[in-house]
Length: 364
Ligand code: UD1
Ligand code: UDP
Picture 1: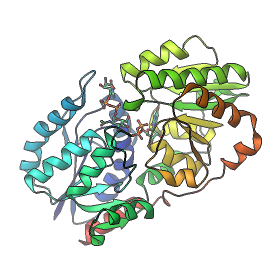
Picture 2 (picture 1 turned 90 degrees about the horizontal axis):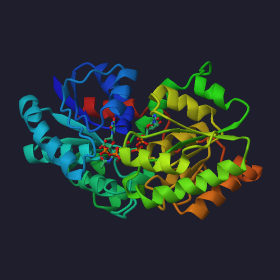
Picture 3 (picture 1 turned 90 degrees about the vertical axis):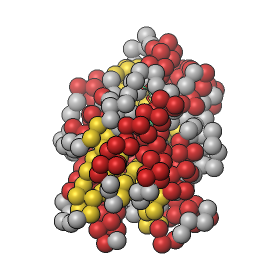
Picture 4 (picture 1 turned 135 degrees about the vertical axis):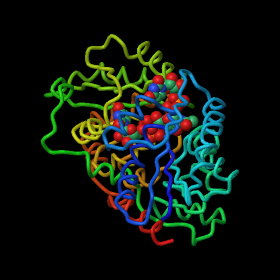
């Protein structure tokens, strides 16, 4: 019996790892264990509930206004005894968070093989996304299995000298998740609020955007919303108090902008499938939107997900007020631009990534 432990701690990791937990649990010959770090609390628990995943271990590390030292040291200190007790045959980590990095480092210290889900994404700019680009590159140094979502991600790993036999192109498990959540008969009171208007969905939380860049992009967005009376903007707001302060200050008091608590993943995916367009600095949303054919303005200068830009769904618009305002207005006003960005495509996979990852782990 092979023991596989999945370690994750934030909302996006959970959304992309829970379908894999459930796939692995359905396989014979594998003992599947889940260790959550609790880097996020409510935003993590929302996802665990949605996918009916009950962790075997919960390190509960989240503190208000935690910084990178807090997360990294608390994961390292918390996970050590779990790994020493269980001695898994493989530990799976996901993507690029501080949980991911610290868990992989812990495995390296204990010489436990690491499998990296969503491996090989790169900007090659260590400051953007910060600190995620570092986390991804660092995990690649120690990982034994690299589950690359796309051919492009595989090429990045090959160029860095990774052994080709350790790389598997699987698609992104985000698409597996999306296939289980979007429903044709879905309704929600917030969607009723937007009925008859063009609904714009927004999220924002990137560390490098906190403060001035976020203020600036919110100002551009508010101007465009105010000039378009048929637009309503819904913003399920990240629980980071620094994000909330800026959002209230710049976006508050406009009756066509609604800020609400983070949506459950099932709700968010259905909102995405019904909205007119999306404004975001999120990573995961850049993967989901092309599948749904929803135009996305990405409020960043660079992306580790260029496949969605190449597919035409994503456009990088940075955070500077005037540029955000103009790009947003153009997408609202120019039907040809809107249509060219609204074609559904699947650069991130066919929804069977979990099956492929489980096949590799069962086989080897
Ligand atoms: C983290 C990841 C980022 C990912 C994001 C997903 C790192 C360094 N960053 O950033 O890659 O895109 O998660 O959302 O790992 N908070 C709560 N409750 C929650 C969640 C967060 O109160 O359920 C608050 C806490 O005050 C916390 C703050 O949000 O201090 C920021 O959370 P943190 O995990 O430190 O960073 P994120 O910006 O969420
Ligand atoms: N999401 C959600 N509820 C929300 C906003 C986003 O479930 O209110 C989902 C979204 O569909 C995507 C993931 O959260 O799957 C993205 O997470 P986030 O933006 O927090 O992190 P990132 O992807 O940037 O690391």
